[in-house]
Image 1 (cartoon, helix red, strand yellow):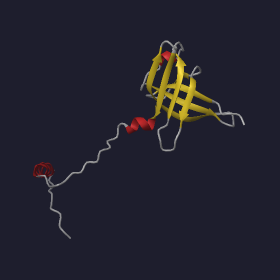
Image 2 (cartoon, rainbow, N blue to C red; image 1 turned 180 degrees about the vertical axis):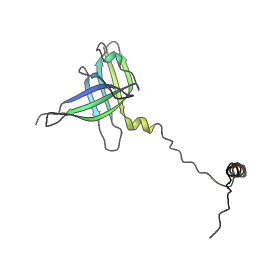
Image 3 (cartoon, rainbow, N blue to C red; image 1 turned 90 degrees about the vertical axis):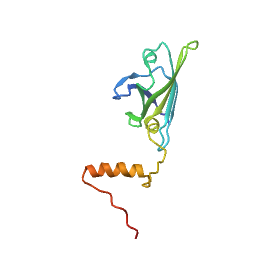
Image 4 (cartoon, one colour; image 1 turned 180 degrees about the horizontal axis):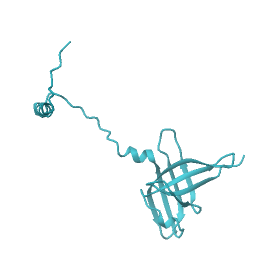
Length: 142
C-alpha cells in the first residue's frame, strides 16, 4: 500500500481564498486529534516566492490528502501562528494552529457569581426596571 500524498495550500485567513501551493515546504508535520484544534508545521526556503510572503494571523494553511479515488480531500486548515527566520540556513519555520485554538483564546473562562444582596445593585436595577414600568417582587419562600 502506497503512503498517502499530502499538499499544503497557503490561503488568506480572512476569506480562505487560495494563494498558492507550498511546493517547497519540507518537514511537513500535521497533528490531528478529535475535538482538538490540531497543528501543522513545516519549513520553506526564504527565497521561495510564497515563503517570503507568509505572515502570522493574516495567512492560513489548508492540508489536503490524496484519497484512494485520486481526488484531493480537504482534511484540515488553520491559521499561521508563528514564523521563525533562519537567515544563515535560508529557512523559514512556520507553525500553524487550528481554528479551534484561535477561538479558545477568546472565550471568557472565569466563572462569575452574582448575588442579589447588594443594595447598590438593587437600587440601580429597580431604577432601570421602574423606568420601563416593571417592578421587582421579592421571592416567596415555599
